Length: 197
Image 1 (cartoon, rainbow, N blue to C red):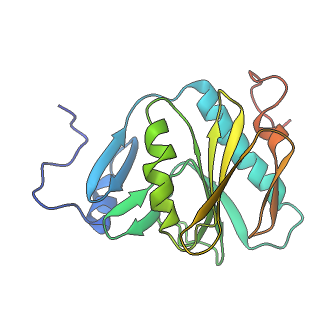
Image 2 (cartoon, one colour):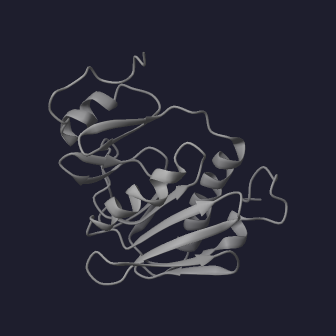
């Protein structure tokens, strides 16, 4: 039995109850339609490296701009509705600065997930549909570490998303007006420790 999951409930959990409960827990926890989804599988090093590189790429894209945006890695959440809370690998928030003592990112213009064996199916299907429901989300990136490509889902009109596959060069994310250098994500030496140096 998994001790981290909340006791069985007859009614779906609310986002507020989930956040209060999850704050004292470790691991990757999400709430989908009122039910807790837990991904406790340890991350492979390549997954952790790629998350870091993605955040670095966003930080570098923001340097020299006057965009009121910041990249956040692995922790803060996106509240979709009263019963759904997701935790992307990387979020780019645009707007007023977020207080340091909050978990919810109010304006997640870009959300990104790095595929792993335990979450790939959910990232490619369920989360795409859920992020499309959040009015602030303009781009949903799914980064595949094995195929070294990015699935770029971009909001077209309303909740409709257009999808394209990018594996080299750069990726323009407008709004907010960022150009993401894919060479940072996928360096020539895939086993390199970091892309920062």
